[in-house]
Image (cartoon, rainbow over all chains, first blue to last red; front, top):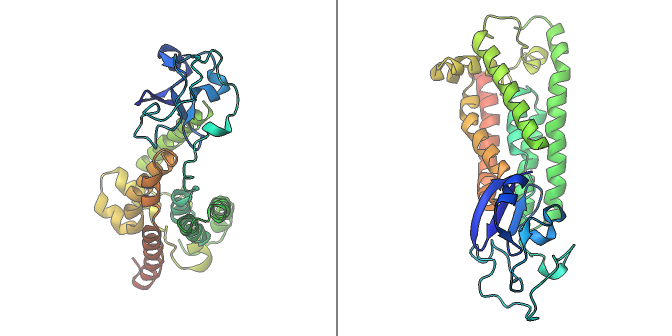
Length: 177
Length: 124
């Protein structure tokens, strides 16, 4: 697994878990890896427990992407006066960033590749679904975009499988070369 | 871990395929599959000539590749851009939206359909 780090406004990565161990991270660091929709605090990833020092001050709220890559810049803090001693375990709904959701995969690459290399008109359906994903996403219909994304992916897969299945049939049909 | 394995496998397959398409000429060798759509309907599909075009391209003959399948030559940089955007979809959402803009997808769709129609009329 490769991780990207945003620590005190400095972004680095990708690094693997061995590389993380070598970095002097504190609980103020934000982490992103493939599969996450947005940056999360390092304290929220169970597999990274013990790889960071607890920050001496309470953790500021906010997220690196939205605040010009400055996780601790100026935002008000929960002033208990006490340094946080224990890592914050588990899910904290207050600190979850409310970032806009990225566009679901349009599968456009696979639609293009299957259209050109599989010799079947069904690839064009996949391109039309890619179009549908973008349009729905732009209208703000995330659910619709996700559904179109999934359907489009199935059209890509179907085109590729049919392309392979039809090969022996095409070879049997003689004549046009 | 699993992702990097897939990438390594994909690169290995591409290298082997690249070597085969470099060493053998699909225009004269019968080892290559020919187009299903062409065989069944007698009409060329948008992808016909891709294998010969790849062979020409691997030999540095861009003009020859363009004559075999112009759409493929236009699509290759497009595919590269889409793959890049796809890889960074979550981290660079604005790039992703730009690459997948409706106008661009419409443009590609129109190109495919027009190319399909014209190549069968003019026998390109």
